[in-house]
Amino acid sequence: MIAEPPLSRTRTDRAADARVRPDLVPSLLTDAATRVLLVHAGAVVTRDGGQGGQELALLDPGEAALLSPGGKLPEGWAFLGHDDAPGGGRGTAYLARLVPDVASAVLVPGDRWSPLREVGGQLSARDAGLATAAVALEAWHVRHPRCPRCGEVTVSHSAGWVRRCTADGSDHYPRTDPAVIMAVVDGRDRLLLGHSAHWPENRFSTLAGFVEPGESVESAIRREVLEEVGVTVGGVEYRGSQPWPFPASLMLGFRARALSEDITVDGEEVTDARWFERTELRAAVRSGSVLLPSSTSIARMLIEEWYGSELPDAI
Image 1 (cartoon, rainbow, N blue to C red):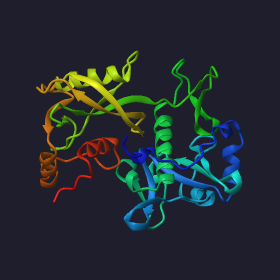
Image 2: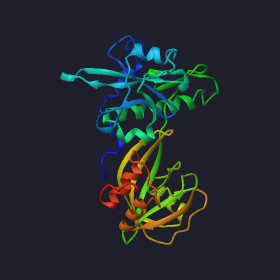
Image 3: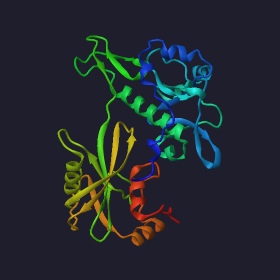
Image 4: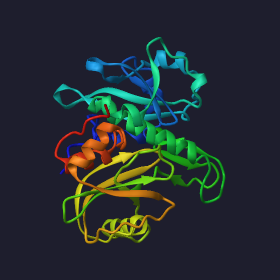
């Protein structure tokens, strides 16, 4: 198994049982011990942390109200959970303020909007878990303002974890879309990496794709690899998972054994694909002729698991 991916880490109790309390968010906003993080369009507010890392810029409720006014309850807020207190009680509670636009939030000097894709690997386990949940919830709220059954307006409910239709009363919940991501290895222990049409030049990564309705993850792996690069896959082995809230994926990581070597890219999703030996990949990464995915992604972890250690950056 791979090590715990950056966005899979968490140290906070989500306390799902507390979400049904209608007074939960209002009561937490009157508690000076509550901490609030600001989130907008896949980014959270951070500041410099120790040893060159980043940390969430957590605000008390008063600071949050000043820096990001509005957010009429219950809209614009979500309960993320709490720390465990000594003796088994509940410690610090955390809320996400879903900021409608960055211009409406005035940040203190030193704080900045940071895309979670870029800083996820620099955050602590607690901060990574909070930020990932906040980004996922904000993306869901933005994309689901209306009821899928009747088209009427929905409102936030259950501390930000439900949207309720104002016409028929139906409840709608955040969705997660399963996707497979696989390190495909051939009989000579070479790794298959592909280049997507919409990526920056020289970017290569593991193949990936969504699981279709009525499909197992094993079948999805074999279908995606065959469709995208024309390679037949046999055995697959689960290696780990990571939420990827851009907007709502759960990446299921696998090692897959190739039964064929000839590559035929589909030309649409994948425009280039290559087999790499370890020395070849290391040299390509160091020269900059191959750009790997960021350390925040499970793709990078699958690649480095095959390689046997961390890969260097370009020099």
